[in-house]
Length: 93
Image (tube, rainbow, N blue to C red; front, side, top):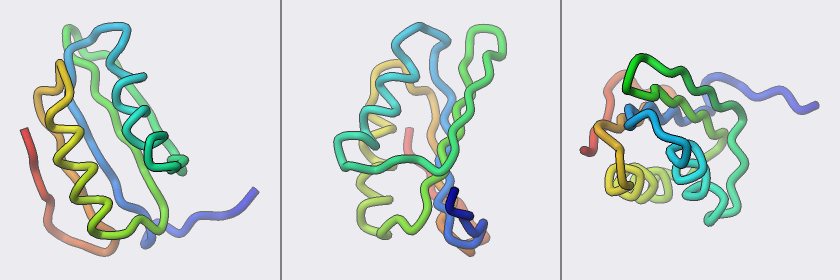
């Protein structure tokens, strides 16, 4: 197993409608770009599914494209991205 440094992670957090196809739609966006997340989690909170996807060593341009694409997915209510070592967040809805 390869250790992943927290400083190298780009973190995407999403709120989607809690429906069966939400996770596959989100993860497909990473698979289409041949990316395997370092970690992903999902938690149902009533009618909302909170999803967190962490990707190591992600190119900044690819990260921005993913942020935009994730925000366009059916059922996505909000998506944020925290770039590596960044204090701010980027948001797409």
